[in-house]
Length: 161
Figure 1 (cartoon, one colour):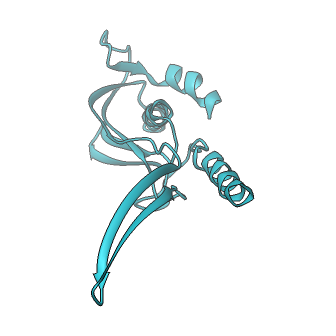
Figure 2: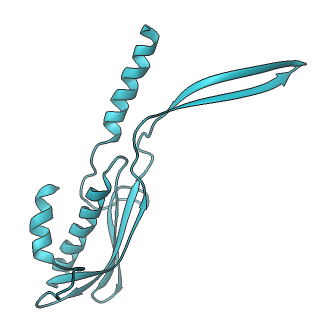
Figure 3: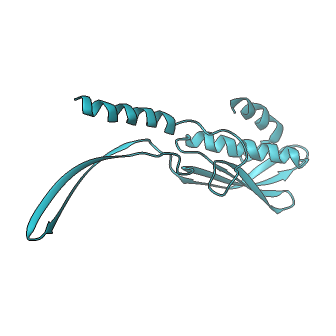
């Protein structure tokens, strides 16, 4: 029983680390957590937010929306409309337990084995990626459910970071 206690404690400790929320900020590499964007044409951008392992999909979507709002304001626009949206990946659910069997022969002898293993995510890369394409505009926001007031989005989502 004592031999089993140490691995269980280790699994629980590592699973607590794997579910930490992502921090809002720029991505510093192609597979690192954070936001990035590129200009498609004046007033049109692709905004991408890569969440860290264990980041909830809703948090990743909110951070992409917040970056779109901040970018809109930085570029001197008032509102933005999402024209395309895609989510890739799935959240890392932490440690998993697996059971496997195997067999083989060596020198005329046959061996059969059964094994139990655990799988962990130790920060191997982002699990959820949200990509949105936005078109920016000035003046009054269009009456469209995909159009957002950049200042209102910033004021609403920024305190959550």
